[in-house]
Length: 245
Image 1 (cartoon, one colour):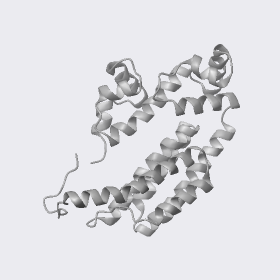
Image 2 (cartoon, one colour):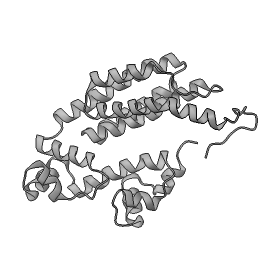
Image 3 (cartoon, one colour):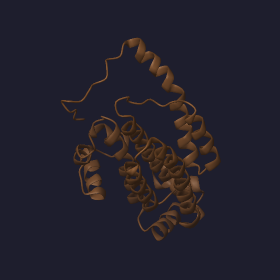
Image 4 (cartoon, one colour):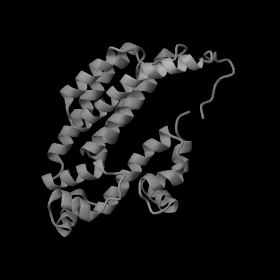
């Protein structure tokens, strides 16, 4: 929960009409941002730049009493979404994590809103470059296709049979090839990706841990917690409690 200084000046409470007006204003930007995430996931730089330019023509919501902090928070959210998008697109965990850490630090180091605007374009280019290089050099076509399928169906009850059927190969062959190239079994890879995806919901929503376990098709909350701790060294609750206020 956010901590507010006793000396902070709080914004005036908005009327219901103001809230409705603001909701209507935000809706097109929300749609454009969803399109932007799809373009990043597909590695479509030109398409993503076009959407960024469309977003820049409309003023995004700001907190008047802290405009720089507001702009930083917006860019942090976009950086998080870019990270998720390239993971879904087939980028390695190492590439995505490295880019995320690098740009989170750069965002905080920006001193002006113009620096953040410049960084937004640079961040977009670097994330898509990282995705495309990772997809091009990391694994064979079959494994890249399997990973892309897993990323796109991460909220479903994935099975080796379903993945191999999508890739048009024998399940045993896919299992052997996956372990050989990726270094872990398909089940381990799927669990790891589910844990990575669940982090977003722990940080940005108030969904219960039990609901998240169900959302990601873990058999129960205890198994979800055990898997989360195995991959992050923290329980889901510890991870959520450690999020910035």
